[in-house]
Length: 393
Image (cartoon, rainbow, N blue to C red; front, side, top):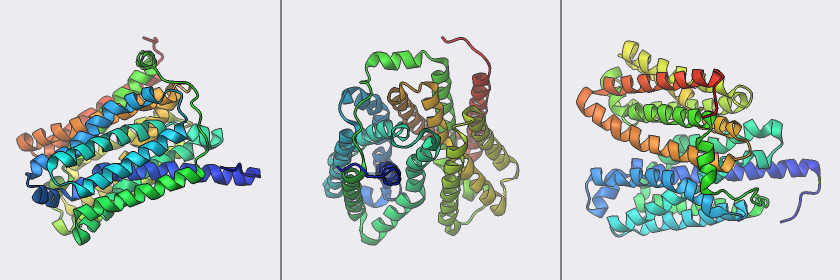
C-alpha cells in the first residue's frame, strides 16, 4: 500500500480507514441481529419453533462476550490490520454458511462463527480511533466507528428484513456475505499497517479489573445495557399495550428511534472525550427519566411516541460514551479494556433480554420499565461514585 504523498492526502486516507472500520462494525452487528426480523421464516424452513430460533440471537451474544478477550489474547503481536481482515473473511464465511444452512445444527455452527467475529471486531475496532487520527479528532472518529452499530439498527436490520420478505431469508444472509466481502476489499485498500503496540496477556485483564475506574465502567455498562434490553427487547408490546400505538405505526416509530440514536451517538462522541463522566451521567439520567415518564404519562400514542424518540436519543450514546470511559480509564491498555467492555456489553444484552421476558410474563410491561428505571438509577449512582476521590483497590 502506498503512503499518501501529502498531509491532506494522509488525513483523507485516515478518515477512509475510520469509515472502513465503521463499516466493519455495521456489518458484524447487522449480521448478529439479522434473525430478529427473520425468525418466523427461518423457523418454518428449518422445522423448529420460534423459541428455538431465538438461540440464533442469544448464542452469538454470549459467545462474543467470551471471545472478545480470547481474540485479543490470541492476537499477540500480529498486525491488527491482518486480524481485522481475517475476521471479515470469517464473517463472509459465516453469512455464506447461514444462507446455505440445511438444518438448525448447521445454522447454529454458522452463528458460532458470528460470535467470534462479533467479539473480535468490536474488541479490536474499539480502540483504533487513537491510532488512525490526530488526538483532537479521536472523539469524532470513535463516534463514527460506533456509528456503525447505531446504523445497523436503523438501516441494516430493517433492510435485511425487507430483503428477506421480498427474496427469502437465505438471500438476506447472502446479501450480508456480499457486503462483508466488499468491506473486506475496502479494508485491504485503505487500512494502514497497524503493528501490535503490545501483546495482551491474561494478567493484563486481571490488572485492569483491579482498577476502580475500570470496575465502575464495567458496572455502569452492565447496569445500563441490561436495563435497556430488559424493556426495549419487548418494545412492541410496550407501545401497543401501554401507549396504545397501532401496529401499523411500530415500524416508523422504530425508524425514528434509530435515527434519534444516531444523533445521540454523534453528540456523545463529540462531548464525551472532554467530560466523559458527566456525559454518562446524562445518559443514565435520560434512561431513568424515560422509563419513569413512560410509567407516568406514557398511556397515550403521542406521549409514547415522543418518549420513544427521547429513549433513542439517550441510549444512542451508550456505546461511544462507555467506550470513551474505558479508553480514558487506561490509555495504555485499550485493547484489554475494549475486550472487557465488549464482554460486559454482550453479557448484559443476553441477561437483559432473558430477565425482561420473565418480567413481562409475570408483571407486564410496567415491570420491564421499573427494571430499566432501577438499573439506570444504580448506574447513575456509580457515576457519582466515580466523581468522588477513592482508593485504588
